[in-house]
Image 1 (cartoon, chains in turn yellow, cyan):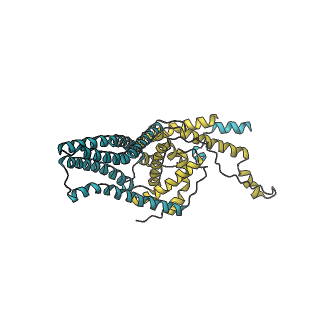
Image 2 (image 1 turned 120 degrees about the vertical axis):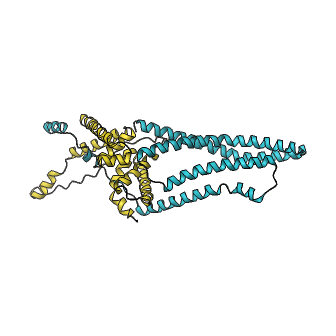
Image 3 (image 1 turned 90 degrees about the vertical axis):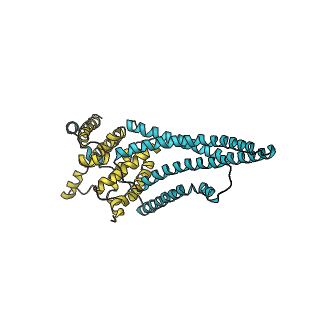
Length: 179
Length: 199
């Protein structure tokens, strides 16, 4: 069966980008890693038998590719902190327009945007310090996967997945909120 | 303002929404398709090259050259070692190119084993390079002594054979040494990563 691989890659670009950022702090190497993940997914789809969801399947490929990457990047390039942030695009409008004013009031303030950026940077830094199995479990959880799906991808027992996630989330929340 | 900050600290942080803020990376899908197809072609080519690597030795058998017993024995032993080497790497390439996608835990264990084995094989290949030179010198010397070849002729053949072998095997030694270092480094890096370290 032929799968529209371009559509799959396009649809899951955010997901696969986030997998790359889990393993690589350097922006330039992260881009290369993302490219390698896409190539691996392209090749992997030829072997897809439909025994798992496409999302689960490509996540397995992506994480496996990253595991190989980790071993190959042993030269330890100087790690850059993750500073790539989302663009903030404020559209302050005439305050006499209620709809526009409400829209503007729902936009994050510069302080909130800075806080969110810092939180993201911190979250990534903390995740990258975790042991690999924990890193995989927590990031898959943050992607909204079920315990069983996470167990299928990582090979960790689904019961242990739940315990791990609860503990890791609690630790991460504490660390981020203490800063 | 202070109350807002306090409220933020009291409410558990929604990690998923922080996580999802990341901006997606972009790639040229046309280029990805081209590279994926190129890699598949390369994998198939490497498999073919692995299969053909035994051809020089097979040709010796087909040509049915009149070789001394010692030389024949050496040829058979080379064929067996090369054959085992070929089967191992063929299996690795086949699994990598066409095998089922494993879960990450199984993949990690497979990769650890492979890196360990590849480092061992590279170390064996490295030492085989000088062992072959020494063995060939001994074989030729014994062969020439057994068949009473004149010393001058024997020395001439030995010098030529040694020069040719050094030409081939010194680069082989250097290459195998680099491969051993590389696989040991990758194995170390993977083990460290599994134990968790600062990125």
